[in-house]
Amino acid sequence: MKRRIAETENSPDELDPLASAFSALRDPAEVRAFLLDLCTPAELEAMTDRWLVVPLLLQRIPYREIHERTQVSVTTIGRVARTIEYGAGGYAAAIARSGTGPA
Image (cartoon, rainbow, N blue to C red):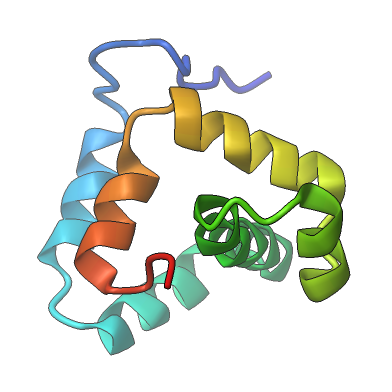
C-alpha cells in the first residue's frame, strides 16, 4: 500500500518537487496542459468541483444552494469548507491572486 503524505506533516518533502513544477509554469495554458498530463479525468473533476465551490463558500452561500447550483455533493462542499477554515491557506492565496474571489 502506498504511503500517503500526512496532512499535518510540517515538511512534505515528497510534495515539494510537484509544487515546484507548478510554480515553474508560466501561464494558465501551461498549467492546464500539465494538469491534463498529470491527472486522471476523475481527479480533474474532483479538483474542479472543489475549486468551483470555494468562491461560493466565501460568499457564505448555504451548502444546499451551492449543491443546487453546481451539483457538487454536500459532503465535498463540507470538506472544502473545513479546508478553507483549517487548511494550509492555499485556497485563500489562490483566490487572492486569481481574482476569482467573492463579489
